[in-house]
Image 1 (tube, rainbow, N blue to C red):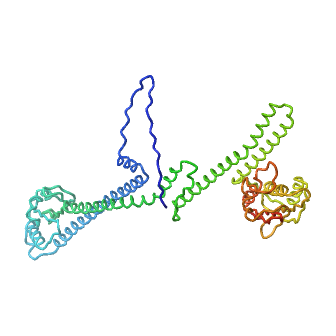
Image 2: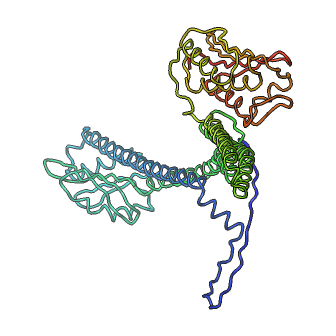
Image 3: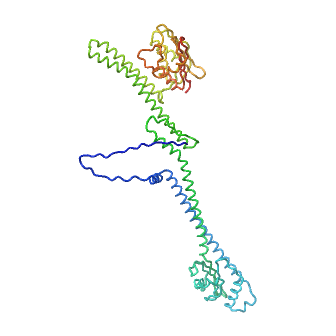
Amino acid sequence: MGTMTTTKATSTTRPTTTGTEAPTTTAEPPESGARAAWRRLRRSTRARILATVVVLLGLAAVVSTLALRQILLDRVDDRIESGLTQEVTEFRHFATQAVPGSAELAPAAEVRRTFDRFLARDVPDRGEATFTFVGDRPYRSNADLGTSEELLSGVRALGAGDTVRHGDLSTAAGEIRYLAVPVRRDGRTVGTFVVTSALGEEREEVDDIVRVAGAISLGVLIGVAVLVFLIVGRILRPLRALGRTARSIRTDQELTRRIEVSGDDELADLGLAFNAMLDRLEAAFELQREFVSDAGHELRTPITIIRGHLELLAENPGEQREALAVVGDELDRMSRFVEDLLTLAKARRPDFLLLADVDLDLLSEELLEKARAIAPRRWRLERVGVGVVRADRQRLTQAVTNLAQNAADHTHDGDEIVLGSELRDGWARLWVADSGPGIPVADQEAVFERFRRLDGRAHRPGGAGLGLAIVRQVARAHGGEVTLESEPGHGARFTVSIPVGR
């Protein structure tokens, strides 16, 4: 959608002084342009949307990072547990195998020999260490030399025990997880086999991975925030254009401005609705201007006449009857004029018509009878249409009566005026044809304008020139139109055409 430029008017006020001293107030210094722009940005819809997206993405990143850390820690625990269990299982399987000459050895010597043979072939995984105890005294270990003493000081207490023990220990080398299994000979415990795994290194790797994932999430969050800021700005651009257009309309003279609409999304619908609202407002203001202009134009003359005759009546009471007759006639003309103006003003309202089923033949007969009361002419019904029309009976009567009055105004006593109706091809038509002077082709459209009287044509005294304008509005309110067929010297034929079904 397009953008529009608006201008702002600024006004200044000056302090006023009175006889008594008023308390002084210190005005706050105006904000700088950058600060005011930043404050508007913080309060804008764009900032709220951006903040919402950032908060939601931030929460999602935090939750996903914590979940990732917990999943990795659980996998580390499972891997450590699996390694400890596998190491103990291998030792037990190795210890049950018969070795020649072991039967003649003492239990302590035999367990030392088992420990020696197992440690000689065992290759520990990274972070794992094996400690052996004969009795409650440390025997051998495959731990690194740099950490064996620190680990041994922590696991020394595991050398004495008759049950399998499992848990975590804090040692000088760091936190470890252990699995201690007693070694039995002849029903008594003669040694202990202890497997440990360092937790610090594994968890440190997890923390490194989590830190990398957090950094990636932060980068993604910043990138998404920038994209959201730009995209939301483009999305909200039509709303800003709408706001600028609304603020720029300060008088009814500026209602011609519209928003350029493109696309078929919700914002485009909003722009179309806003433009439609401006169309209705423009039409309403135009109708108001026309009403005020028409009223001022037509009421000025009768008011002047009435005032002049009232002043004359005050100076010459003997002319009372004549003056009152003139005043009454002018008041009647004003009343008819106001009634016509109200009809034109209501023509654009949705409740202007009260639709019902109308028998076209009965309506034609009624229109002929009402036309005969207008003026002494030779009124004749040329054709009668038979059928039902969905229309406002009163408004159609008003329109045809106005056409009959117009025909009478431009003919003389004894002239023929023809009325007629027909129902054909889904349209109902009612017409009035006279034998008057006719209307030039160049002026045929102008006769439907308000207050338009053609030069050289007779017209009814007191007529305001609104009758044909009312006929057009009635026809258009029914979804139809009024047409004119005329040539100078050959009369005129006005036809009101409306669709049968509405």
